[in-house]
Image (cartoon, rainbow, N blue to C red):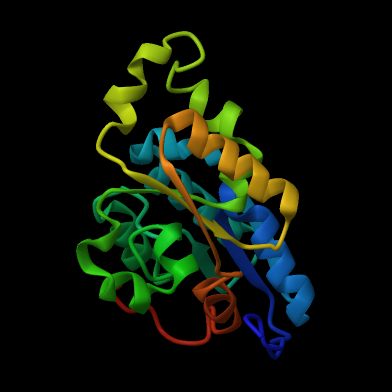
Length: 211
């Protein structure tokens, strides 16, 4: 069982998360009785401009404090901020989920790190990306208008690995179609929520530490 029952903590907790994780965070909370969690999600398209993530999180922390939340958890990995998000977390005494990006914590940070260079030429897809491939990836990159750029963006990848949070046949077909469109070999691995579930279970219960 990838998502064992977790024990809810009655003290209110504000989770500030990436919009790409909203459905999964709500699923973890529902499945594990984490009724003390109040979720605020920031725009998923910040991932196209990662320099926006840390300032947006800092504003959301200030808002949560103004609303009276003493316990706050950041449901972002580093996500390309180059340590800027960690600096915000340290400044405000809050924790974030460990890992460089969501692909790592869905697979499991330890397993991802142990894989070493095995993922260097892998393009990762999550449930979110399988749902929003066209609107979140193809159109922002301009590939709907300039398909000739496909090799520029994806020429160094050799496979698409769909790390599935749910066992959904329609999403699997979406991911397979995306791999075909990008000219990549297709693989699927069911990960469930990975480290996200345990991170949310322990969120806010210990002093901030560097990640």
